[in-house]
Length: 282
Ligand code: C2E
Ligand code: MG
Ligand code: MG
Ligand code: MG
Image (cartoon, rainbow, N blue to C red; front, side, top):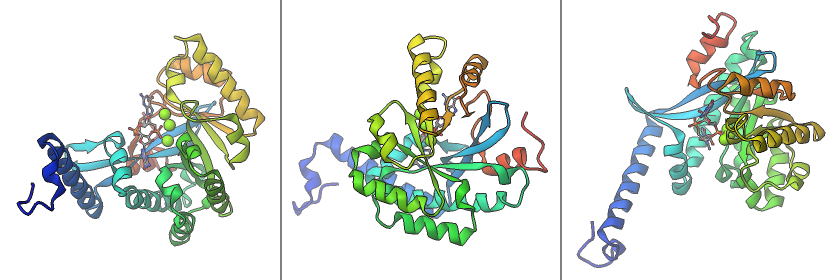
């Protein structure tokens, strides 16, 4: 609320803006509190090869604010980026992911899986990021070659030299990079040559329109051909229908994820379903 001494700039805002500022401050405090209480939980969505074998998983964070109050990342990642909390959240996600990889290493089934973790451009901007990832790998004993960091095309709007250098530094520890939501953003094909990438993820908007829009089928085919030429792995996201899976398998897509194949689930559930002693997925 505006203070009487006049130094508080808030009094120059209209009441609506004041409310928005209050809401932001409250949300930030709630997120900080949630971080300290361990309310940010890792979910895992399985990824499969063309033969239907599980080959990996993607970590997707959720905020468990209460027993029946689970919030998806679309509702807080943008805010975490604006407020700077993304660095703390990102570190938590990486630490928990590496702990999982270290556990999985001891299991004959889970030990074969790759684990993909989404990384914000704000994390990539941080010069201390590679060292912090290396520390987490050391501390947890996770096998670095199983860790994939997913970047979106927004990193290409950054200082090229800086980002490439940071990627090479992380690559030198054995970590791989995937380009997420490929085809939706800033991509220029030149980036595929310049950046040390291991995988491309076909955005789910193209997968969704397979069978509806012939243009999407052409785009998907072109991305698969591109990946093959650049010797990149390919992961299709958002596979919901058998016809989509069949199209992707016939087209030579090396792996895929989506509700048809497996939903994101709490990590302990994932380990139960996909571990050697697990019950398999329904
Ligand atoms: P993304 O990395 O592209 O993740 C895929 C999103 O698609 C996930 O949404 C997933 O639940 C959803 N999805 C998976 N299969 C299907 C399907 O068959 N159909 C449909 N309609 N959707 C499907 P989610 O979990 O809501 O995550 C949204 C975005 O939030 C992610 O997009 C990612 O960009 C971001 N995100 C998630 N976790 C993190 C994180 O730990 N750090 C950062 N920086 N971003 C994160
Ligand atoms: Mg992703
Ligand atoms: Mg994606
Ligand atoms: Mg996407």
